[in-house]
Length: 212
Image (cartoon, rainbow, N blue to C red; front, side):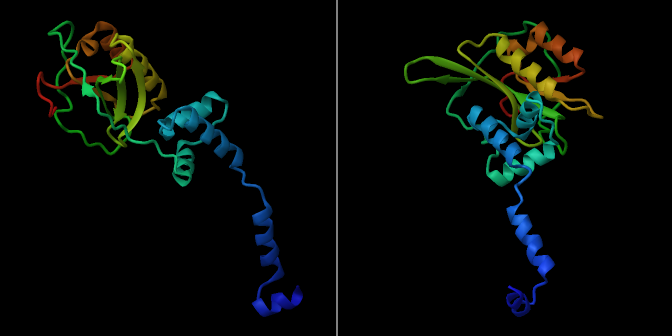
């Protein structure tokens, strides 16, 4: 072996260092295993924030930046939502409070949890059954922070993911604004009170204006 070291001009210490590195178990192996498990359980719809939250729920506290890096290395980034559903028309006139259009088509942001948009989409299955999807998407990363799928477009389809999203929100120096259409769900007092209690600004698009 010493002859090989001389020929390769390689110090013994360097050789054995790399041998030990290759034999050393990856300290992230267990973490990666759990991350893969969470992604599989979510049908690969979770982004790094929801995975970080799920890890925390399991007693594993990891920085979200590390989770994002590992997911990127593993190719486990959340797939963007694509669908052939149609926007659910939930407008019933003024049934509560209609908020101002604070976002006003300014959909870009350079920080997370500053601008989040939401709506309800209706899907029709082959058997004729209808399903309703209510996602909350962060405009910073286009990541779906939370969502609810239901057979009925009840109030809970927006309340449940809203509560989940608020619970995941980190401490910020700026306030969050949630933008939606003027559907009755978003005018409902239970929804608006929940926003107010958590110091979240509400923004609504103008009636009949899809560009908002």
